[in-house]
Length: 132
Image (cartoon, rainbow, N blue to C red):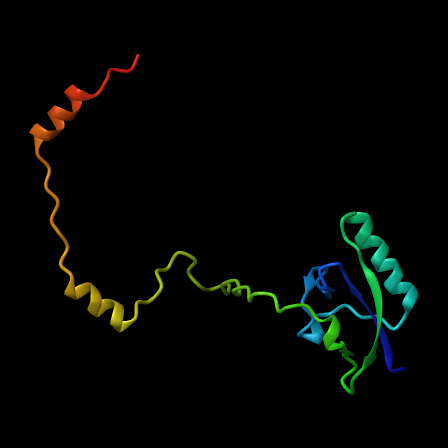
């Protein structure tokens, strides 16, 4: 058996194993089935949940690793990489480590010291309109 069926939508994205649309550059993440009726059923489920999707079933040959060989003419532009979620033991609120160049730049520019005077605060209170 050297043929499989995959699903593609109107944006040229392929239906993935994780039930989301992928660009197909990782052939292992693409949903594939050797049975056309199973692909048609999946297509029906997708379009039932989201009526805006225009899905078609595509027949593909398989390589030696049983992954679909997708024709380059139907491939979409690559999707942007999504950062991986943090691991279970990592601190979600930790500050990222600063590079030595950034630390050197911070040392070069001294910060101005802010001052506060009570007279300026009193002047602002007199000029503001009273709210009812």
